[in-house]
Amino acid sequence: MSAAGTFDIRRIVEQARALTAESAPVPEHPIGLGLRSKHFLRPNEGQPRVRLPKRAEGLRQINEIISREILDLDQHERQVAWRILLGQPSLCAPIRAPTVSELMELGFPVPEAEGPWVRAVALAAVYQRETATKPDTNITGIRFAGVGRLVVVTEEKNPEVSVNAWADVRWVVSERALSRGMEFLYNKASISIQQGGRRRSAALLLGDDLADSLDADTTSTVQNDLSAIAAVHGFNLQVLRRPRSHAGTILDHVRRTPPRLLVIAAPQEPKVEDIINTYRATGVTPHVYQLGARLPEEMLEDFREIMGLAAGINPGLFPITFFSESSEEEYIDSAVPAEAHLVIPGIWPVPNPGRRLFHPAFRRVIENLADGYWYTRDLSEHANSRVKQYRLEARILYHVSDIDAEGKAISKHKGAVGAIIRLDDMRGI
Image (cartoon, rainbow, N blue to C red; front, side):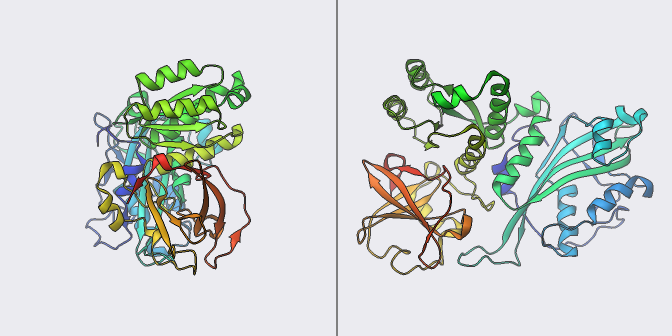
């Protein structure tokens, strides 16, 4: 496995593996799971292979971990999930080994003398559970992911022979949770691994008030977190600050090196509008997402959700394709799974459709000539929301309400994602 594309959520989501049984090879590894007796992981070119221990005393810790419950999977499905994660992970990359004291705190006692022989690799994989069906959709299965570390203690003279092992793995069901796990692992990877693979450019514009609230003690930490979120979604991030104070500098940057994606964490102000218009005038395919005025504690979670959409990943870990990479006709036939099989009388499907537009993240956005509102399917379905309702003002759609499967408006906190959709960021279909 090469360093190229190592930390790439999109690639991992696209490589989802079904929880289907396979005939166990012979001879089998003592840990079971259908792994071969001589099973090993290849973390990276030029790195020693990683093997699971073969002796019972070295497998005691990891056997206990593997026997634990995983979400709502039955015993057989748990075994298959662990087999894939340890046998065929989509991500397997060397990361900084935890210290002996860190391992002690995590419940994995390692003698101080063995500290130099501790190795760790990042693991991640996405799974398709074909036996379940989500109501009101055409999804034929449910997806979830395993993400975390495999830690081994090797022999002093042979780094490919392990004498003990431990795993720190989370099993998650959302793109956002997978992103958090990937960011943690990415931050522990070497610089060469972090820089591996191709990434698109992205810029995040922080409003003056938001930038001022990030004092000197926290700015570097927040920027590191933002960069990690962008990186695991396939973007190199440039953070721009204070459009009121430094509008000229920002405008010059956008003209000279227009990013593939522009995220606005600032209130709608004339200088911010100038920056957006300048970006559109550069001739690149515009991808503008507006978070609006944000508090520091809200920004990371909202930015994470934006990056998931920009990378083309459904909140439920299904891949989405951008309209800039294919024809519009293909999108009509390959809609997000959550778009089909939903009927809300008078609302969805839109009974008297007018303009039909396509957004790279929110998919079809349709005008209803009967009531003047615009509607789109809610891909995340938070709080049982099925459809989002918008009103149009000056070529901007403003969120009005979320609607449940019975056609009732839902009273809930509205996050930043999807609060504003610009007509200029969509195409007709």
